[in-house]
Length: 130
Picture (cartoon, rainbow, N blue to C red):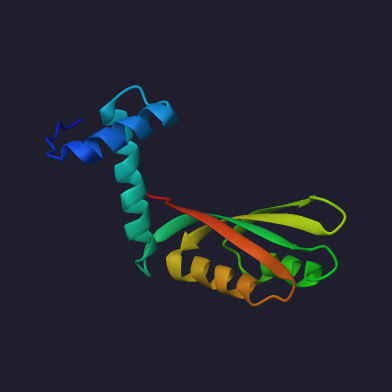
């Protein structure tokens, strides 16, 4: 593994080390590697031709978009699996796991946003070829 050198100001280094300790990293190198992976993931996500994995969590009203959400699985071969759970009498959570070209993954997110009854969408993307 190559060794690199990095210069940073004291204030940011102090905050970084505090965050590193809170997250339980055993070394600066471990924390910087993770931060660099996050940086690459974010940058790769902006490329239309890149490939990523996507975890998409959708909170919705139990009586609204069931059919539309299940149709997504058939419309997008990139969706590998879906998980459904009832949070309470009113709210459901659907989790999608997908992998593919960034532009198609973004289409999935856009399609979900257009469904009536969706209350909240959160997603995590990561480079699938790192």
